[in-house]
Image 1 (spheres, rainbow, N blue to C red):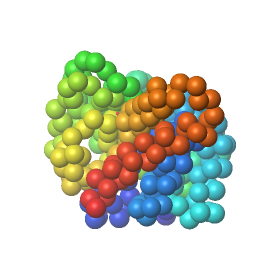
Image 2: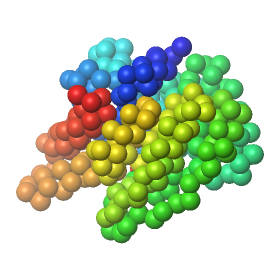
Image 3: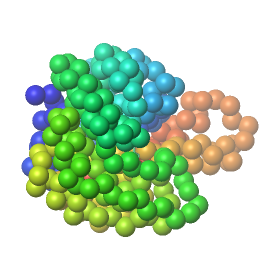
Length: 279
Ligand code: 13P
């Protein structure tokens, strides 16, 4: 059993969740590592397709390995919302610990076929696969409007998808959406318990930014083991850089500017880790 699988098993049993924190810049990755080391809590680091192509898959794998093997910090790497077999095969071959295939834009049977193909390949290499059948909308940004409401996918369809593909984790729609909105949607968290009565898959909560603490805790109590956060990290990162440059408009030295961004992201991740672990 892979390390990350045993962490998810423990999380499900003991009712805590692991954060997946997305990054595309080294200050963000250092901030995740610092929070994880100080709290001694494992973390998944996530790269979407855009983030991975900017940062470089091999750079991401090499740095996670360095933090884990040399510094004994419990960081793992997930490829977030991969849209093709080719992209995810490359992530697996490069050493990602986990991959998420998002086939939610595909027709249901095609999504099953493509997800199965990835599961077969990844499992041979001991890599976990997260699947997605019900589209989780929005994007990791700040919106000056109310979140739109999506029609939720029937649990029967999700159960069939999990049973046929044998995915390890499922990105479940419970009203969640990527991004932060002036008004967040109402969550239907009982779907987590209802799904877990049917299958033993690990449940993942996407769109973790902007969700109320009370709802996060309820989702974990109902069995969610991974919560993805991106928007709130981006907001902290850019906010700290903007503030610093407002106060120091002539500064051009990266190592004087970027520690502010790293510290802001570190504080946000620390806050999320404590909430997810219930410390
Ligand atoms: P947020 O941007 O809402 O935090 O969602 C992140 C996410 O779910 C990445 O998969």
